[in-house]
Each structure stands twice: as C-alpha cells, then as structure tokens.
Image (cartoon, rainbow, N blue to C red; front, side, top):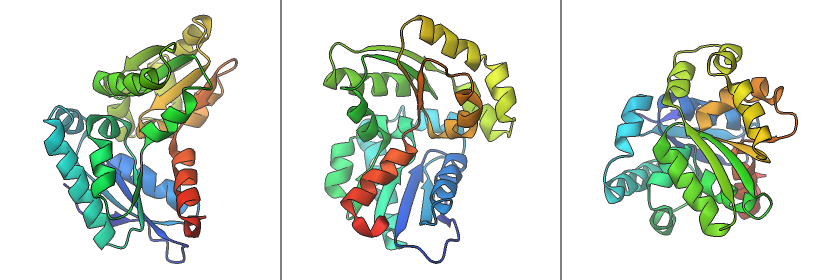
Length: 233
C-alpha cells in the first residue's frame, strides 16, 4: 500500500477519499476532484498495472480486507466519503462487506453500471484486463438477463497511459476508432470505459463515437455521493 497523497485543495465543502489501483489512477481521481474544487486524499493499493492485475488474483477476502484498511486510513486522514476509483478493484472485492464495515460512505463504478442496465441492452466494454471485463459483465447480466456485452481487456493501454503516451497516439495505436466502428456495426448502444485510467483519452475517442454513447463513471459516482451527503454538493 502506498502513502497518502492529496490534491492541495484548501477550501472545500468536504474531503473525499480516493482508493485506486496504481498511483496514476489515484492522481486522476484527485485531479477529477480538484477540477470541481473538492479536496481529495488518495491511496493506491499497488505500484504498477501489472502488480495491480496480480493483486486482483489474490483471494477475494484478503483483497477486501486491504481495501477496508485503506478506507479506514483515508477516514483517519479526514475523508468524509470515499470513491473506489478503480473498476477492476471494485469487481474483485466484496463491496457489500466493504460498505458494511466502512465508517464513511463508499461509492464504486459498479453502482453506476447497475443504473445503466435497464436503459440499454447492447453494451460494449473496454477494460484493463479480462478479470475486470468478467466482473463488470456479471454486474450487468445479474440485473438485465437479456443484455449482450462485447468486452475487451487490454492491459497494454493502461501501461501506455502510465508511460505518458499521448491520448491521440493511444487511440491510433490501439485502433480504438476502429473498435468503436465495429461495435456500432454490431448494434452496441453504449461503450463503457471500464477503467479509470481511460479518462485520459476520453475526449480524443469521443470524436469517433457517432452512433454510440461513450460512458465514464466518474461524474455519476460524485453525484451519488453528493446526493447521499449534501455537504459534498
């Protein structure tokens, strides 16, 4: 587990904890909050995408306990609520146990995907690895048995983001524009970017998304916290 970090926002309606897989997506989460003038304190559970993938292969109970301990540390550092800013981590742990044990309100991307299941039938899913794909697909199918999911896990995209490759280059190098076109031909209505790292190229890919909705969970996660804790609004 890495050290606590913060986004240096001093005047804020509340402090939100960010738990993520690597320091990079922890920073993305803190930057997301800073752009909205909300103070964030963050912690990552691994040091690299590869280590994160290996961590998620651990026994579910052990990883759940690590997350519970991380949230407690964020709470002690002043967090009044917490965002699990990592799709694959959210699906690899027992979120019900995390929420039941947590001293503060906790929200994860999986809650947001659950809201989508009755609005769409044909889903595209781009995730960091196949474990994450399977976990998100399971969440969708548990709530909509008629849903169809086309999923892809690609850890190399995450590693390229960690290495600072330009967003335009990532879209081109991984043929994400072609992927979107293929999904549209397959009848997909919404493409979920199932990794918080993918905020990085959202705007670049959005330009190629005629005929399909491109979805990130970050904004809705914050809205859910604001609804539950009015002082966060």
